[in-house]
Image (cartoon, rainbow, N blue to C red; front, side, top):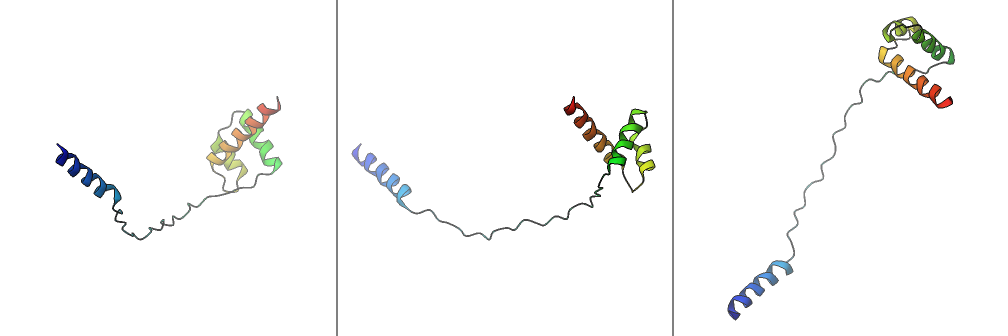
Length: 92
């Protein structure tokens, strides 16, 4: 029984006292992804009022975008309307 304990103890000491092998791996650099072509638009107060009024009249975002021009998408108009709605709710 003592020999088994000694053997087990020797194996444990060997396992936990040896230094682990560290393999140096080259650090992978992240691939640079190209940003999608994002169209930004700087809204004027007059354009914001037009979006608000036209939407309140029941026009679609697509139609409002074509009226405003400036290569605006329906999603941009929709987003601006959502922002205006949040601002309106915050005031009340």
